[in-house]
Length: 411
Ligand SMILES: Nc1ncnc2c1ncn2[C@@H]1O[C@H](COS(=O)(=O)NC(=O)[C@@H](N)CS)[C@@H](O)[C@H]1O
Ligand SMILES: [Zn+2]
Image (cartoon, rainbow, N blue to C red):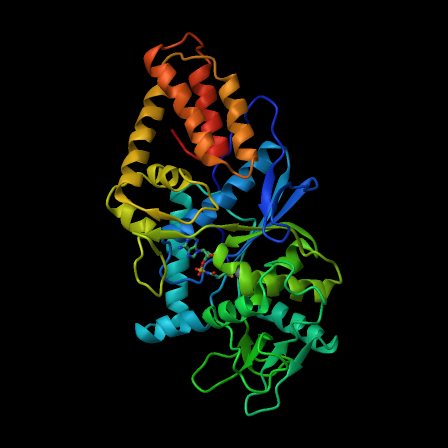
């Protein structure tokens, strides 16, 4: 699947700062330690209702991770999937009397446009679950052979993963069993399925049902479970140990717990990711923005209403990525105002010296993506430039390049 088109990231003079990032598994902010090639896996969309501001805020958070690693001179091997086959997509296609393939393609195309408008640097590998089915079948076959997976012996012999297989299950989320069961049921799990060894065991392969799409292969006709899709796509392109697995906090459990357990069982390497990184939920007027609630604000709608995508990006970066927060009209208005002041200041022929601003930008962003402080630092320079002016003729261009490279905002 074609990723969206790339965006140039300017080089910024001065010393970069190594990224420190909160890790859900350890519960602390720790330095990332990528090699020359940083390995980033961020879960992609299930292609319907794309791209709402919740999606956008999550991909913006990991765009900052990407940009800080680039600033530190790393190459970044970024992989993202598209869950273009799964129950929620089939249900939505059914509801709207749509062909599920057409729905997925159309929404994925819209998502790409929105990512380009928000100037998100694209993944090197952008892989649909359907395209990855041969890899998924191979992975499930290995899990069966290792005894970590088993077939039910009822009318539909679906294949499940024994969640106790690695002996480390739960280290990523740190949730107790009660919490796990609740989230498992709420987020696509089937704890009550009779015949499973344990309610928490997760589906790897769903044997074909009448009227459902299915794919043939060594497992017999069927379709993939959710978590195994991300495991196969990530492990086959990035190997058994990656630097960051990213997503919104609703992916902490079951999705990232099982993606990790499946990967560790397949590769024998643990932990699967050195950082499990999760962004907070964007809500609308206090309610989480979600497909089920239907309270969605779309990037494409704002764009159609002639809202500057850079103002949308700036609004979503105004609060800390890990905080649950709401999208409001004043959040956007504040960002529009900020954007025009920043643009005014960098179009001046000169300004206050900006080297220390660039240092503070790097300090704040490398400190668990502290965008509130980073934006405030730019505000400070802008306020000075617009009042006292300043005589450094190189400063405006330096600020423009730093804000572009590190925040992704084109002034
Ligand atoms: N309201 C929200 N606020 C922040 N992030 C959100 C919100 N809703 C969804 N997301 C994030 O957006 C990404 C895509 O969500 S999704 O379309 O439901 N798709 C999936 O979660 C799966 N395809 C991942 S493999 C996920 O990382 C999810 O956590
Ligand atoms: Zn995923």
